[in-house]
Amino acid sequence: MTLRHFISLDDFDLATHERLVARASELKQMHRRGLRYEPLRGRTLAMIFEQPSTRTRVAFEAGMTQLGGHALFLSENDTQLGRGELADDAAKVLSEMVDVIMIRTPDQTKIDTFAAAAKVPVINAMSSLQHPCQILADMQTYFDHRGSIRGAKVAFVGDGFNMCKSYIIASHVYQFDLTVASPERFRPNADWVARYGSRTRLVTDPEAAVKDADLVVTDVWSSMGHESEQLLRLRAFQGYQITAKLLDQASKDVLFMHCLPAKRGQEIAEDLLEDPRAVVFEEAGNRLHSQKALLELLLIGER
Image (cartoon, rainbow, N blue to C red; front, side, top):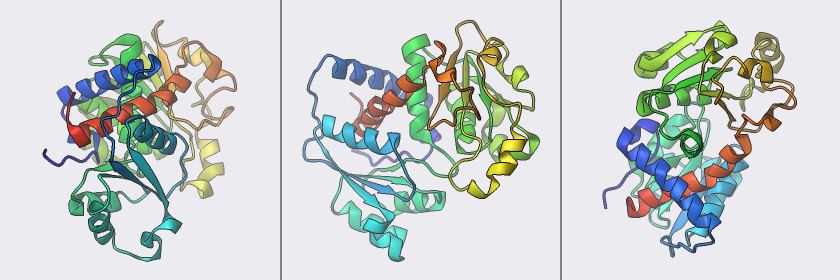
């Protein structure tokens, strides 16, 4: 089987993504019916975390267990990477011992280095550039409620950081139309938009972005690594909070998503996650099934 990595959303073409999303939905239904499916017996996932995680860690660890495999949690303090071991050396060592490697680090080049040196699949579990595993869950959630997202209108309101960048590349891969609303100072990187933003429009007005949207997405205004800018960002993003009134400007069938954790009272109104248009907790739960589908694809191929 050909070695494949999942470092960026465009590592897979549209057809592969659509099959992956449909497979995630199928695995979810199998799990709900209590069907035992363990194709990864004897397989091990190494999970390297240089940043905190709830959904990513639990989804990968529980997913490997449900598929019959085993997951190893490795914090920066648990490995020699924290003491200066080169990433490519670590990748070569782990390749001799495990079947797949997952990395969460702010440093995208470290993930790229692992992928270049590893003999097993490497998964980007979030960097400061992209969060591709979250997009898989979001696309599965949309698929379960509305079918294909091709041609849909999507609005991202908030910081032009890794989730926004992920949606820009997702619009390119999944072929939907995206409008990003953010303060000019916090817009996504111009080079990223030039490369992937053929279906992306940048605005500063949240109402203009959300109008008639089929999907509205946001993220925290101050992500990991931005702690020193928190007060600056709180001022800059005033007026960008997602409220029920703002969602009323969207399509009558709009869905609202957030990758979590959320700061209630900041990027979202205090009670927005209880709005019937919000599918945020289902979205979080779908991390489990979309990541199982990804592990299955990378280790044994399409089913």
